[in-house]
Figure 1 (cartoon, rainbow, N blue to C red):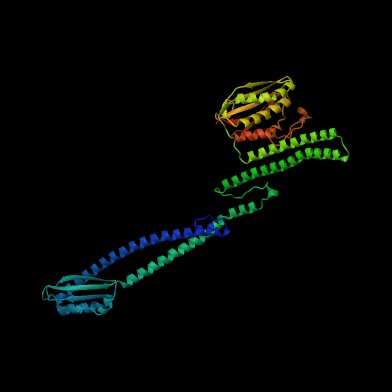
Figure 2: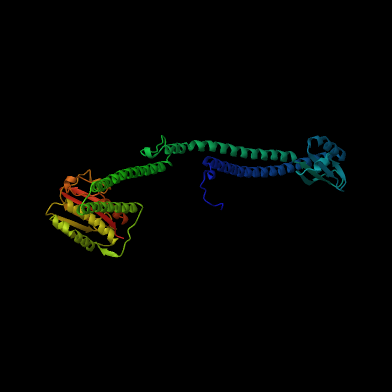
Length: 455
């Protein structure tokens, strides 16, 4: 298995607090290490420079002492150098005559030979009183003590860096764990949500600004889920209710037919009645399958641009008999050339015309209005069917396109049976064309329609 494969098990998870505190600890140690290294380099450079100046000053002082002591002769100079020897701890002074013979040397030279931190300075001292007029001196200083102190300070700085990293890591882990408490609280609230408690929402007493968008988006998602779950439950109840009546009719008529001997004519009538109920069931099932496909994101298959008015005239021809029977006239206003799924467009318009025919006043005019100017955006075309009759109650308008919704049956045709999916199919077809639905009803004038994306 590739090491770059996606991690999908809890074993592959990591702790944000541990990872973040570790990175902060490493960053702290890196920053402090760089600062301390730079500081120590500067201090070392200053110490080296100071040591060089100190060595030069010592040599000048020794030269002045030798020059003054030489005025009393070689013996007086040797006595003075011997007297000053205890003050030259961890150092070594050597003096040669002008002819190169050794005049004076401090004890402990062997101790300085093995030192890695010694510095040597050679210089001449004018001694007019002595033979040759000058002496050659070499002064050796051991800085091992300063080097050892520097090493100790280096280890102290390393320890401080590590301790600071550990403290920052531990403190960061504690603060991050404390800062993530709202997330744990949100997780607990999320675990408490179940299908029986979809009305619960996430909330924090003191929400962090960074968490607010997540809380708002999750709550909005729960709102949509609650509505969808409620619609699903209502849909299941409506389906059961709608299927119960035709099934009860089929069962009842079949039981009656089987209760005793029947003539062929009676059995034929029973079969015809059952066939009508089964055809009604078939239409309902096909409509529900179509709506299920639309809910899963089905998109209309658009063809070449076509005149919507021409399609509307084809639909009107199918409804001519119903219009004449209701004493209605039909008028088509406007046109638009749009690429649409012709079959779906005609189905949606047919459903709208069927509704308008049932509810329009006898002798009135049903108007099919097609317009791009009336749409909400320039990229859309609006198709509206308008009829005059009883107004739809304002409380019913928002639910007009819901599945199995029926308004007041007293408005028209209480004897007719309709399963309440016609306008839901109109809404689905509008969505499949990237459009939406609209419904208005006031002063006896009802306008129901949909919009389509022009391309």
